[in-house]
Every structure is written in structure tokens, then in C-alpha cells.
Image (cartoon, rainbow, N blue to C red; front, top):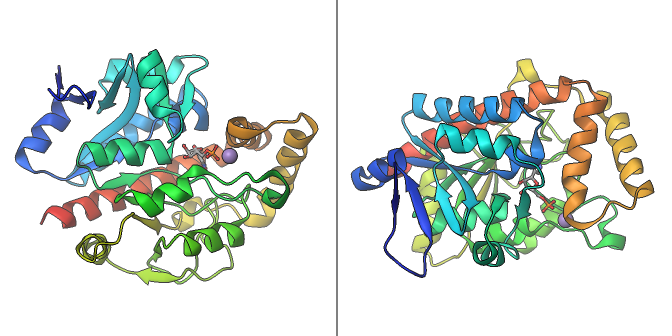
Length: 309
Ligand code: PSU
Ligand code: MN
């Protein structure tokens, strides 16, 4: 069962679970849908989405997976909706620029980090868990390929928990752009900024925090100070799931070379690279990816719980 908000200008539809959490003021964690449609293959995408939701519930919060379906922003998906989305072909990948147009023209749309932040904020949700964020691509000085996720973090007041950024991106440039935009980048429980499959990128993060309560309080302070935007929490992958950076470096280099050779551009770049890396590692990277998303879900639930305490 779902509930439609009676504001004609806000086409929001809540799952029953999320609606109840909103009424009770319970902690809610937003989840994106591009990771389901463009970030992982079927059936692991749907299995992971379900496990991530369960992990959030087990840690005292309610999951709200966000996607666009038939002119509505769905905040929380049913099991059946998750299944359909996970198997659907050619789902549109929606960032800030695409959201309004897709709501008008209809059909399925998967929300990126940027679009999920916008929808979460509209729904009053301030914590969001994902795997990796978009960033500055290698060669961006030529291609100008910088994800809209970065600017969104500077505008929309949502705390995003990710495992850092993949080495498909230029991590130093990504951190520079975040600094320019005034986005707090907070490593959780260590000094270094993590690099998705590995716990360290070799670069120190600008800020370190060791508790979910501090992270929740920092976002609140940011709002109290009148500073717009959210914060990026960089949560290192669990030690037991880590893959050494030098193991993946040649795979990433091959995937980038193939993307260049095939003139893959714009929105297709990130999904192409993710897919090739999964194929080339024969699932090894996928297993690690699943573990880190679960780990991020856990921390996000703790931050959301601390935020309403
Ligand atoms: N990075 C990952 N996994 C992902 C994505 C990025 O490690 O699934 C997805 C997220 O939805 C992110 C989007 O918001 O790709 C960024 O795409 P682009 O680089 O086109 O902005
Ligand atoms: Mn891009």
C-alpha cells in the first residue's frame, strides 16, 4: 500500500513502511536506484537491494529506496516494485538535470546520488547510503566529465555515506572540487580517504570523525549556521572484504581504455566502466562492492538514529 502526498506540485508517493516512519518521527535512510539498474547486474542487484534494506532495519532505521515510476517519485519501494526495476531494460539514469523532465514524460527512472539527494530532501530524509559517488573522471581536463553528484552535495542538505570513490575517478581532483564547493568530506574511523575497494587512497581526508552522533550533529550545525548542502561520509570497506589497489589497477586501466576506444561518453561512462570491471574480475569486485554497501547502510542507520535522538 502506498500513500500519495496531496501537494500537486510534489508528486511524492511513500511506501507504507516509510509513511509510518514519517508519522512516528522514526529514523529513515534513503537509498538510490541507479546502483540497482546501472551499478550491479541482475540478480545480485535485487538481492543486494533487499539485504541493504534489511541491514538498515536491523540497525533501527527504515529504508527508503527512491525511484521514478510513472510520473511519481517513489520514496520506498515494495518487493514487487524492486523486482520489476531490477530486471527492467533501458531504465533512464536520472541526475538533477533529468528529474523534472522524466516526471512529465513518464516511465521508469533510476536516481543517481544527485537525484536521490534531491528526492530525499523533498521527503524530509537527511541521511542516504550508497556505494560510491560520482566524481571527477580521469582526463576531465579534456572531457569536462565531472559528476553532478559533487555540486549536489554543496546544495542539498543530505548526509551521504559512501565508501569513498572508485579509482575509475581522479580522487585528488574529486577532493579538490569538493573543497572548492565547500563540501565537508569526513572519513569515518580513520585518517585516510578510502578508495572504494581498498581502505585507503593514500590521501588524507580533510576531516575525520569516529562517531555517528558527531556526524549527525555536524549536519545539524551546518544547517544552524545557514550553510547549504550536505556532507560526504567516507566509510572504509571492511578489512576482510578489501581488494588491494594494485590488483584492480590494470583492470580499471583496461576498462577506461575500452571506454575511450568505443567513444563512450557522458552518462554512459560510469555504467560502462562499472560493468566492465565486474566482468573482468569475474565477480570478485562485485562481492566486495556488496559488502561495502552493507557496511555503509549500517553506518547510515546509526547516523539517522543519532539524528532523531
Ligand atoms: N559509482 C559507483 N557505483 C555507482 C555509481 C557511481 O561506484 O552505482 C552511480 C551512482 O548512482 C552515481 C552515478 O550517482 O553512478 C554517477 O554517475 P555520473 O558519473 O554519470 O554522474
Ligand atoms: Mn559524467
